Image (tube, rainbow, N blue to C red):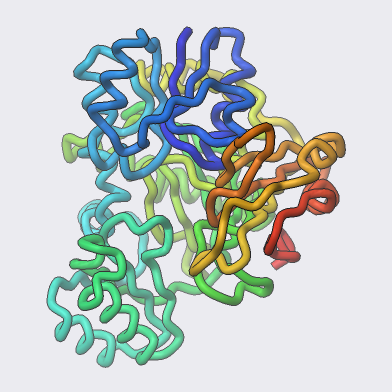
Length: 418
């Protein structure tokens, strides 16, 4: 089969790496791809958000299957367009991808179908939002309604911080139109866990639980990023909690979307807070998380294309999804200054040495140029290793990262330990 993956980050590299292992995949393409993806797939220079261009290329080149990975093209209806062109595509249609594209929509859905989440209010008026913050006090959470590259959430520890966040979103348009509407909610307390789940519109199969480290610096300090590292499974996600999540959150979410005429096919990302009153939803995403995908797919023991096809065909209940024992850890190596201001275009050394130590180095922001691999983004690499225990997997990831270097390289030293 000729398969196309849409996207160009570390998540897409992990997806391509896993698909390349399928005996069914005879030709693998990625658009736009990156310097590392080029080692396992043919990169096509089409922007991930170019819905028309992607559909045209897929049709002209007779793709048998397309996997749409990032949030933007899903929200723009790329899966709808590919389906209309007669090409099977993995990912939710735009009317289901709205669970990520609009936080206000997802909160209303949870309220309507009694899915446990934080208390909240939605605002389009700045003065009313500021008045609500003053009345509620801090800590409090401010979220931009729309897509904001994983950075549109501020957990404010003071009223002043929350007011500033609202002003930046609504007045200064920090996230463009994504911040015209804001959701302000109570600050839930407890360990945060992510569960990604395959879904075919009716059936749902959770993947291994994971934990992501969002803050830029050690000790969970500094600004929010797209993720500085992740590991799986989470020791905090017990079989008892998993059972509650399935009954109270996962299956009700799938049923709710179906009842609303928005059947979800693809990957639902459940961001969960394990509060003293039980698990609650922090947020939904409509796709694989990044960097959670890197360790999770490293543990998958089933043909990924078989799972993707079953999700599209509505036969997920007929696939036996298996996982390796042990654990996996992904350490993100980022450009100095990320997520604010950083330089790129620096040569990267030590990649072969890292892989020789048994890790898989997924490329997030790189480009290949004249035989060299250069930095080309904020998050540059995701060094991913597995082990018999979580401690072993973490140690292996850090050991493999040692030979790698590029100018101003930055990473956290406490992934999996806090």
